[in-house]
Image: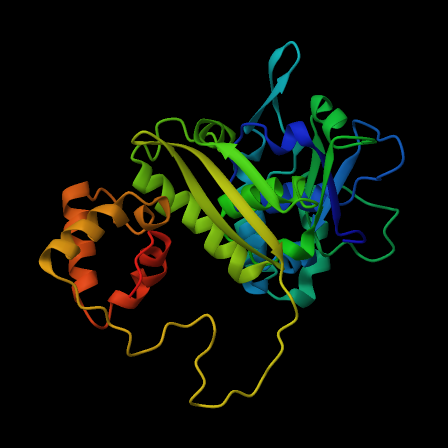
Length: 345
């Protein structure tokens, strides 16, 4: 890709849709090629190469398969955007190059080596599976996908002057979850403030979850934690979150994030306790009454509730917290929350 910058209208950032990780990669690779300051021909085709996908973390040996998978269902994908007139529903793409698997597999057996790619491409053209690209000087041997965006998509991806979000593709290198891509895009919408708040209902709608992950513990584990963990591990930002509760129901998700600072290595005296570490010998012995009281209070904290197992009932969760408080090895993980409750050792 000549340009790694993707620009999207904020309405598209919060729109409702569901893609696979590979489909998201394909869309982003194409969006990066759209001119940022010129009118776009709605019928223009965008070509995604093996190299483009490898830049987004796909293993080179798997890249052809990954792109074929991305092409297979993308034409059927729908996006729903909130407008002043109501919800606008349309397809992402007008057309996509879709390999006929039986022909592709037969030809690939005839031309299995990369040195034969040019011959392989020429054979694909005979079956109208690939366009001839006279503007490209080389043999086009890396061209494996061709997509044309739906005309209704153009206002949300072209000539944007206000209310838009920028994303650098290098920031999402190696993301493997669709949820990570979506969370990161939402974060970049509020990059200046480092704070993003979204209702749980809106989050479910944006990710097109329908009846999936009805239990909040499942939503937290398989969607929220999956995305946050991957963003922290693989992006240039660190992000934390807080779940906002009304009564016994979680209503909102708050994300706070910032760019990672360059790691500075320091030499520390072995006897020095890091300011962010709990001393190893600070076990707090509690009476049975204190154990019951603080286990109950801890269970009411949103940050602690995030530790609950999927499907775990409150009585069981409180009993587990009590057991942790009683364990000299495990108690330290709850010390910060005890201090938050005003407990002073």
